[in-house]
Image (cartoon, rainbow, N blue to C red):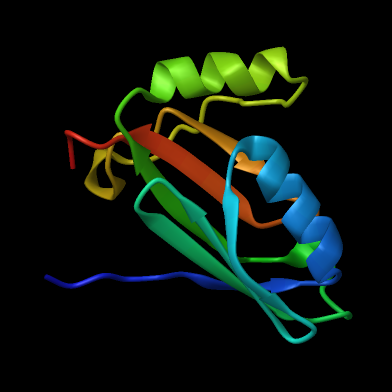
Amino acid sequence: MATCVPILPSADLERTRAFYCFLGFTVVDAADEYLRLRYDDAEVHFYPDPDIEPAANPSGWYLRVEEPEELREKWRNDGLECPDVPVPAVYGPTLFAVTDPDGALLRVGPADRL
């Protein structure tokens, strides 16, 4: 078995923690210089980068979940924008996206289709 974990920049690790915990992620480990979060079996890590500009942040990652439509509805009900993301089919069936406070794009799609 192999696992891949995205490692993304964060201007403020505490703000990043609060945002992702609001989305339903749990903290695996939190330190002054590193943050590890989990959503079901998926993990994402963050390192401090106080100079990151949200409008110019090229970072992004893809989260595959069992019921992306239900997750989208939940996040929308919590007040988040979850726009459609038109991407070429070669990148997989992205259903929607959420942008974190540092400008990283979290794309969400179904776990059962690549």
